[in-house]
Image (cartoon, rainbow over all chains, first blue to last red):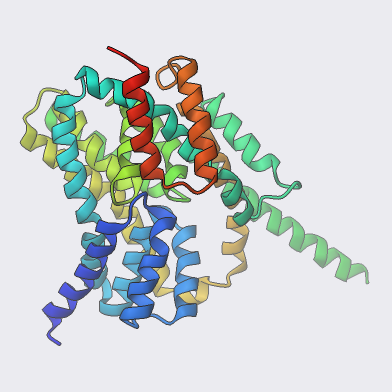
Length: 190
Length: 187
């Protein structure tokens, strides 16, 4: 297969994924797996799972991170540019059209009535998956204080999420250092 | 504001959102809201909620959707022509993707070394539960007088919450709430 054709192929696969995954994030993981592992055999299944863990622990949308990984693995840096463009373009086109149309109808009374109903629903849709997500993120009774403190400080004290992220990373590392020291001491007195 | 300054401000804001947007999706909302509503006032909080609603019913991640939408709206709201708005969309979408592109490229190259790295695991040990807190704050920040105008709002909220927990399709729930809003709030 020609080089151009290969770029086009990975571009198209991710364009398709970008165009058909509604809601983003976790909804598209089975779709990507089906394409990349099932149909194309670009990654082994365990490789895919490792990649997913990595994509989730890096900043940015998970679908973009996944696209970059697969593109890079297959065709190097230019490959990751092709897959990124593929995953970004569908929503870019759709949202741009909506923005151009919606800004003209926004003050229409009918649209305003419809959105009065939709807005509380949006909040409910954000809140609903919290319990399930909390479980899979390893939230237990012992560390429940972490999400509670984070939510309250962002919501009530208006602390920037940037500081929250930096503090959380730092705390995790300090805790690890502390644990390491303790085990070292134990071994020392033994 | 000069157009070029506006583009630069948008670029920097979305670069920041891409760089600190851990957890993807809803976890990025408080950060986006802080940048575009609180700090820069490019859009109102109800506009922001509407973007989230549009994101929930269209393909693609919320980070891209809001970048595209806000890039266009912020520029056209300042009185510039639509064409400049499209450039604004492109600027924001590019900016939000750059951190991922750089970080993922580095990580992919050193993938097998980072995978079981205890320092990596250590950094994530507090970050993961913190991300849950960020998602909770995203919901709390949107529970305001703009989005919850009266008791009917709370009824819709309660109904959608229960239905969503019962795994009803979110797109269907948005459509139904829109219909409910149309009938519950007569002109």
